[in-house]
Length: 77
Image (tube, rainbow, N blue to C red; front, side, top):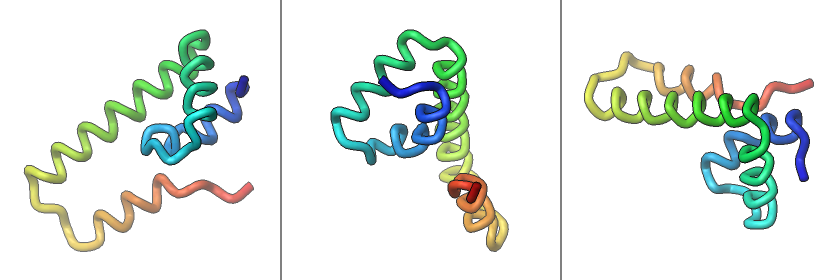
């Protein structure tokens, strides 16, 4: 079972369904029992929804999409 640090590190991949099924099940089990990680998951999922809806509805300034995507890239440690 993943710990909080592992779960949060893989949260974007989880939201994109880009993890193996076994890993998705492990993270889902962790989210069920960890309110902190569940809160982070809900925040990221809602943020994605808001950005997706807004992006479809409004014209975005030049380069905005690239800057936004850069915010979600993994940070080097």
